[in-house]
Amino acid sequence: MLAVDYGDARTGLAATDWTGSITVPLDRIDARDPDLVVRTIAELVAERQTEVVVVGVPLSIDGGESQRAQRTRAFAARLRAALSVPVAEVDESHSTDEAHDRLKQGGLKASQRKRLADSVAALVILERYRSTLPRP
Image (cartoon, rainbow, N blue to C red; front, side, top):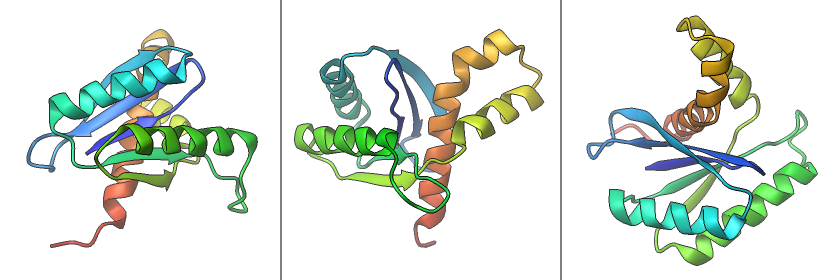
């Protein structure tokens, strides 16, 4: 599985290992061009033999959609068109805050947290998605 924390300038990524049991943050994509982000993710999906991509969608407290959520859903649609694997969506509300908290608890300085937060947020998104799956 591959999780995507889509942003206008930075896109965080996290993935499971080949067994699906270990989740790790990956290098983020620093790009503003959505086509480049889609191409980069498509290459990563092929390279890692990804079976599902999970995109975090920032829903509001009442479950409604902000402009950010609409842009993210449009990006997820672009991914669906470009990939041959399913693209799922999960609520990513406060995932970046949770990522910063985790990194702070890990003793990282603010500059280190900023560099890693997007991909750790993607890790949170992937954990949320995995928690919705039925247990074997």
